[in-house]
Image (cartoon, rainbow, N blue to C red):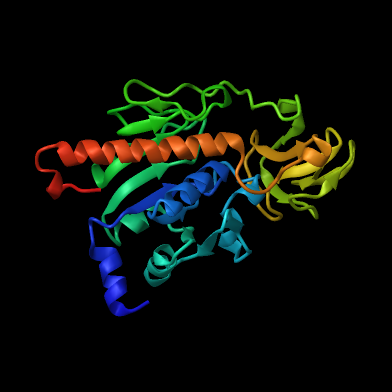
Length: 289
């Protein structure tokens, strides 16, 4: 990237840049949707909860692994130059371990999307630091910690929230082949996770899939590993560690799933609507996003 392009990326407040918090499958689906709509994208990783649906996410780009979803490539970026280069290239997004405070030091952020889906954590209010704050999932209230929000619960995924709060997490995952929560392995304790298996591997009921802090964990059913935390990851107790897809030949562990697509479509729509409203408001030229 030229010095001129680098300076323009970090100085142009009207540039269609969106920073997305999270590298999970929902954050990644939103990144794909917005990149194809010609936004520049930076994905900021958050370690909690751990990403398990890695074939549907850009998370593995943080380890310099190939991460391509629907023709969009996630590229690791840890410096200002790398961020500007990756986020500016066609069909490419920047994936970084840098946190929001680091990114705010580089330039004003027109659009911030919190896609971490933190079910039990109170979400901070970032509205005063960015042009538009969009919250995805539980723990968001309009006018308190976001400007607009999108529901992520399976029964109402993609519903826009313009006032009030998003629904609390109900603890019920969407069914997959008529199988619900029993297809997941939950971390029984905190610790470092070790496994020789990766996404897409076949699992049989009772098979050892790895160990967490010395505790061997076994497959609850036959199927394909749709989700598995990366080997060597530190995981807290009570989070999803493994997901098995029991659908046989219909099993799917890459690309975008239907729920994530709905959320991504709704997020883009919400941003477009907010942009239109802002342009009609007096003085919008002073606070563009």
